[in-house]
Length: 244
Image (cartoon, rainbow, N blue to C red):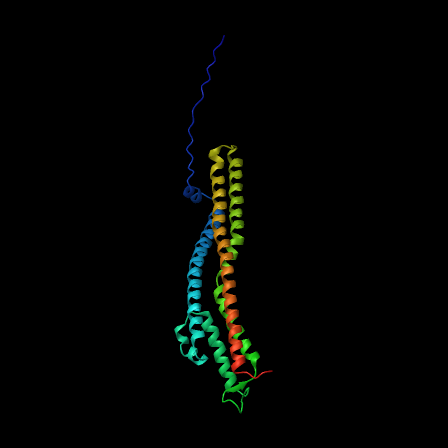
């Protein structure tokens, strides 16, 4: 009976698996991808916060303006206080409509009825066009920078995936160089690949959610502008324009 003793040399391999170490030792292409994603993430959250404050302010200002508008005795009274609504979209639309109404009244499109001192106007198309332009301008202002959220939401995962592919390729290259597939060899490449994937999703998910959320909010703002435009036109037609 033979007793065979096999002695194995214990070899301890220290592998650094921290995220910062993985980023610092990553391929330059992966680092650039992560830098782009970091910038997109910061921009996304800055836009989300600023849009939240902006739309909340617009909502409060619109409610205040509408309340004062329907209480006023005339359009002139509303216009006299218009400077107090500097950040109100509805007030901006009203200003455009009121000024266009005055231009029409001062032009050859106005005529005075025998029964009334109020000029009877024609050229309602001009007023409608002015109101539409003002509405489109306000909506464009509200939509400003939302395209960045859409771009981040759609491209973020692919930028992260690109970094993932490069990280995996780096791991295979090290296997080819060392001839070993040990954890010490492949861990850095796999780690940077997974970090790129995670950062890509971290950038894209809030951007997509924020974009869809604010698009729904903007649709409500668009409806409010459309309703006010219709009300303003109805008031103008009843009081200032000739019946067709």
